Image (cartoon, rainbow, N blue to C red; front, side, top):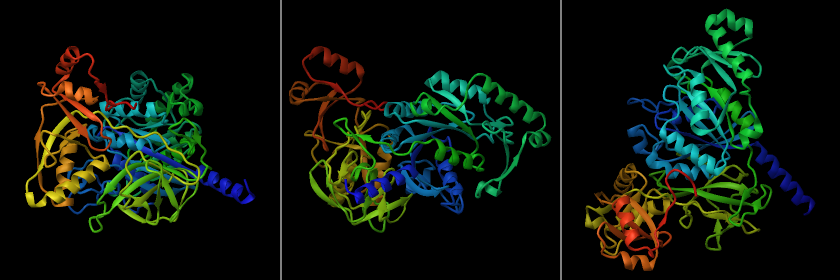
Length: 536
C-alpha cells in the first residue's frame, strides 16, 4: 500500500468513527415518528417539530412524507435523515411501526449498526415491539431502550424494567431515572453523576424544552419527597447491579434504558448524547462468503430500499444504499455484483425525509440515494475495485393474497408499469398466474394494509385506478416443477410463479389443507419461506 493509499484508508477510518447509523423501532402509536422529529430538532437539523396527528394547517413530521402517511397519521415507509451533532454524523432511519410493513423495517435493520427500541410508558412491550426485537437479535443489532410518554399516566418504572428482562431476556441498565410518576414528570436523574435535570414544556412542544440542572441538594429543595423517592430507587438499581455494561450491550445481552417524552421534547437531548456515546461506529461487514469487508477497504454498499415517485414533479426512482466500506465519490463507476455490469453514480443524493440534495462524498455508515437506478433492487451489492457481494435480503412469507385488475383498460400500460415498479421496490410481492394471465397478477403481502398502499399508489402515482379481489389462501410454500405438476387441480391449493426470482410458490387455504396435501403427497417439495417475525 502506498503512502497515499495509507492516508486515504486512515481518513476513511476516521470518518467512519464519527458515524452513528441507527433505526427507531416500535409498536404503532408509541411515538416513533415524533421521537425522530424531536431528535432532528435537538440536533438543529430542523427549526420546528411537527405533529404526527396534526390538524389542518399544522406541520407534518419530516419523516412521514407520503400522502397516505399524512392522511392516516402512521408511518408506511422508512425514511432516512442525516444530520450532524456534537462532532458526529448521525444517520437516523425512521421505520414503519405497523406489523403490515414489517418487511420494510427488516430491510432497514440490515443497514444499521444500532436501534432505539421505543416503549410506551403505559403499554410497555407490545406484540410488534417483540417481533422487531427478535429481528434485532437475529441481526445482532444492539438495542438502546427509550421509555416514551412519561408525561402521561403509565406504569411504574421498575415494573417496566422487569417486563423487559422477563419477556425478552434483555438485562435493562438504566442510564437515567425519572423523578415523578408517569403523568407527573418532573425531570431526570443522571445515574453516573447524580445530576438532576428539570424540564419545562414549550408551547405545543414545537421547540426544545427548557432545561435546568441541579445538584442533589438543589433537586431535593425543588422537588421534595418526589425526588427522595426517585433517589431511593436509583440507589436500589446500584445495589442490584443494573449498571451500564458496554460489552454486554454490544453483544445484545443488555440494553441501556433512558426515560423521557418525545412530544414535549423531555429527555431527547440526553438520548442523542447516549447514541453518540453508546452506539457502535460502522464495523466490518461479512460478505456472502463469510469474509469481513474492512471499513477502509475500497467502496462497497448494500441497497436496502428502493422508492419511486418521492418527488411527484420528477417521477424518479431512488435506491437507498448503505455505505459499508471505503470512500464514495459522486461520479465514480461501480460494479453491480448481481450482474457484473458497471454502474455510474452521477446522480447521487443525500436524503432528509423527502428532501434531498446533491451528495459529493460519503463514508461507511452513510446512506446515499442513487437516482434513476432502475437496475437496482433491495439486497443488491455495489462495489469498487475489489469484488464483494453481501448476503441478499430475504423476503417474508406472505399471508394475504389478492388479484389486482385495472379498472380502465385504456390505462393498462400505466397499470403494468406501476405493478412492476411496486414489485421491484418490495412494496408487495407480485406473482404471475397461468390461470389468470398477465392482466390480473396476484399480489402477496405480509399484511392487508400493503394492498391499500398498492391501490393508492397505482391511482395517484401511475394514473391507473385498480380494484382487488381477495383470494382464500393463507399460507405459501416454495415448491419445484415436480410439485407444480403434482399439485395442479387440487382443491384449496394453487401454484404461482414469483416474478423477481422465478421461484414457484404453492398457496394453501389454511394449515390443515397444507398438512393434508403434504401427507397425501410426501415426495412433493414444500419448503417454508422466511417467517414474518424472524430473519433467516
